Length: 113
Length: 112
Image 1 (cartoon, each protein chain N blue to C red):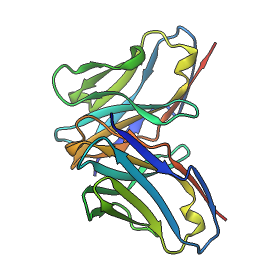
Image 2: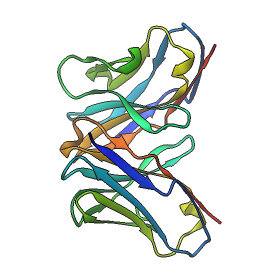
Image 3: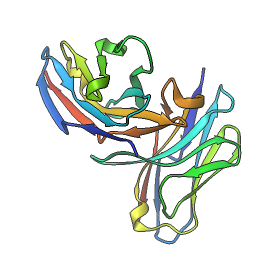
Image 4: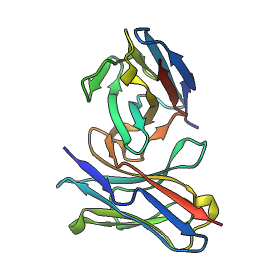
């Protein structure tokens, strides 16, 4: 069966420090991969998505970047964190064209101090 | 760009009451529609989905949703809620390249 791992679960980082959040998928190949940010009472905002290795699409301009170095690995990064980067980050995967819905990771609570 | 509206931010019901959560989307083309649920302390998970065929779809735990194309709606229903249905519910629309747009969510509290 397919599983998705996301870590760390929580992270407290100072302003100006770098960030690296990792997401890996098991049990499937060539998944679509997504990074969302969930704000309380505001739903989920799509940050990045990827349909293949090295293929990244950004949805909103921001202080973050994403990379897909391997088929089932998706990384969210920042060179210098801002206070406004605090939030709950979710990784998800789907089959091509998302006909069956997303499977979400457990999320990372990021607090920038 | 497509958008998704969930009409109720917070719904409070007693056990055995009927539930209907509204969801409307703005997109004129072919859509795939989803409801996701996040129980306290758990992952977001898929509750049910529609992409073709019968507009009345059934999901897990007795939930169902009806796609009404003319109204751009995909409302979630359950005839009799239980305390364990307390959760946050998200409607989502998938239109382009597998990306989903989510509503702001509805928090459902079921009183025992």
